[in-house]
Length: 296
Image 1: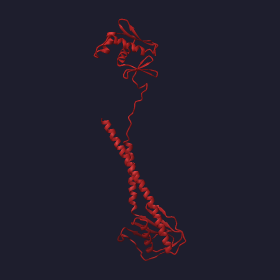
Image 2 (image 1 turned 90 degrees about the vertical axis):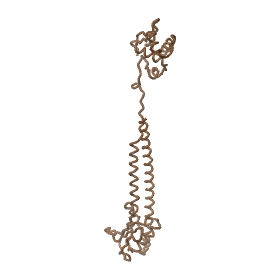
Image 3 (image 1 turned 45 degrees about the vertical axis):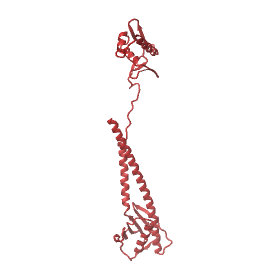
Image 4 (image 1 turned 30 degrees about the horizontal axis):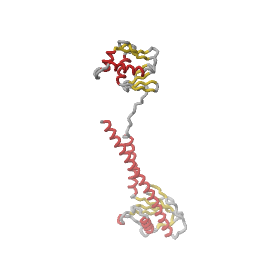
C-alpha cells in the first residue's frame, strides 16, 4: 500500500514537472518570437531615422548601411558618407519614428565617431519629458563619419525573464528525471529461475500444477500433484495404499477406495512419455514409482 502511494506521488511529481517544463518552453518560444519581431521593428524605425537625417543634410543619394544588432536590446545605425548631426532634429526624428513603430519610450542614444568610437553626442529618453536628459539643444555636431547606437532599457526585463524561464525548464526536466516512474522489474521465467523438480525427461512444477516435457505442458489436478510429490520423495520404494490415502485424502472429505486407483491411472498415462519412469502396482500392498538409473 505504501509502495503504491509512493509510486503515485512519483507520477504526480513527474507529470507536474513535465507540464511545467512544457509551459516554460512555450513562454521562452513566445518571448523569442517577440524578440525577433521587436528587432525587425527597431531596424525599420532606425532606417527611417537614418533617411530623415540624410535628408536634413540635403543628401538623397548616399546609402544607409544595414542596421546591426550589436548586443541584447542594443542596435547600431551606420551611414555610407559623413554627415552633420543636428541634435534637435535627431531627438525629434527618433521620437517620431519610434512612436510610429510602437517601440518602448525608455532608451539611451549615443552618436559615436567612426574613427575612435568617442561619444560625440548622447541623450536619455524616458517615459516622461521631465525625466529625459537631452543636452546640447540648438547646437550642431560637425560633419564626420558617425554611427548611432540605441539601447532600449526596458528590454532587459524581458531578457531576464527569458533567463528565468530557461532556468525553470532545466529545473523541471531535472525534477522529471528524478521522479520518472520506475517500471517494476518482471521476473524472466526460464529454466534457471523456475522452481521445478526433475523427473526423468519431465520437469515437475508442483506450485503450478503441471508437468513439462520439451515444449509440452501437461496439467495436473491437485490430488495428482500430491500423489506425485509423495512418489518423488520416495523413488523406487513401495508406498502402502493406506499411507497414500491418509496423506492425500486425510481431512479432505470421504475417501472412496477406487479414487486412489483412478488418480494413479491418470498419472500413469501422463508419465507414459518417458519409458524410464514407471508407476507400478504392487498387488495387495500399494504403489511404487520406478525410476531407471539411466533415465534422464
